[in-house]
Length: 110
Image (cartoon, rainbow, N blue to C red; front, side, top):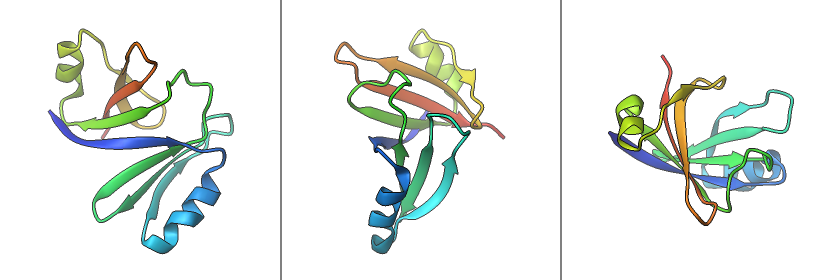
């Protein structure tokens, strides 16, 4: 059910980090910029994906790891949770441990 893991790296601004990693071959796949405090980007290199997040107000802890799933509803049920459709085109649920770390699970909406 889990296909891959994606580290989410908190940044002050997306662009300096994108510019820092571009010479190494990181490509910007997409930037989510709804005009608020949640600017978010996906970068890839050689089949590896990382996310950058400017958000400080989304309730995440000190570390975030995002897992892509091919059956998000079954995975959510195993965790005793419910997945919900998000405005950014995924269906997700999140778990948080006692230390404030966030484990996010998602599936792309078709």
